[in-house]
Amino acid sequence: HSSVDPKEMKKFQLLAHKWWDEEGDYSALHSMNDIRVPFIRDTLLNMSSNYHLGSPLSGIKILDVGCGGGLLSEPLGRLGASVTGIDPLEDNIRTAEQHKSFDPVLAKRIQYKASSLEEIVEESMETFDVIVASEVVEHVADLEMFIKCCSQVLKPEGSLFITTINKTQLSYILGIVVAEKIVGIVPEGTHEWEKFVPPEELQRLLESHGFSVQAVNGMLYNPLTGSWSWMESTSINYAMHAVKSGAEGRSSPTESLSEMESEQRSATAGTSV
Image 1 (cartoon, rainbow, N blue to C red):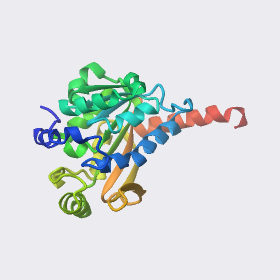
Image 2: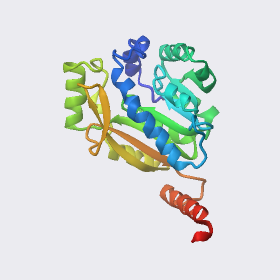
Image 3: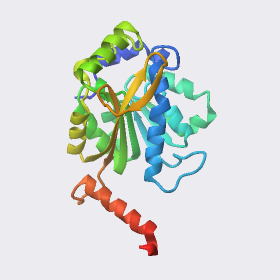
Image 4: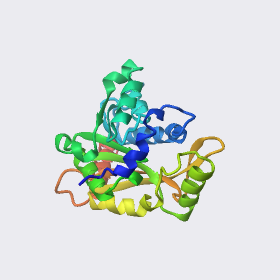
């Protein structure tokens, strides 16, 4: 039993060599880096007090699930993170390895594996500080199993970042009819509306596996400018940040977070209370 969907594998197999063509089939994912990379970076910096100028994510172990050709792994590696990128398609991993080889700095910071998430669970229990699954959950065969595996490989109080597409009439019209059939921003057949995930459902699944959702932000793609921006509404695309609850014995994820916050507050307040 696997969270990998063979039909999805076939679709991406055909495009494996096109990941780094910024004007090609993956152009929208290239420009998504303009908002998803700062979202991940700034959220993590706000949670930590010790970071290094120049490589702010230094010392942070990130798992990039469904990394494709490495479009998100590379900028996270350049920010200093130690990144493991996994993807079930060997052709995607070959593309990612080849592109990484152009930058000697990344050779030390990123490692890629042709693997599904559940295949690395046993060797990687509570290994990672951060998991990113960007534009992935709408392609998996078993979302609940996927979330469970994320929880298993993430350290207590670790962060999970997800970007995906909501399941609304608007997302069908814009995400499939317009994006695939009319404008051709993404190849036809890339998405199946039935597999889109509403944020409420994703939040419920996360909370049932020991996560506390911290932020849900709407995202909007403008095909005319080829750029992304944040927006209030989550009716099309959205980004979610969730934190895994701390050590066993804590009553709830939110409680453990408020405990941490009050500890931090009293520590920073010191004698001035």
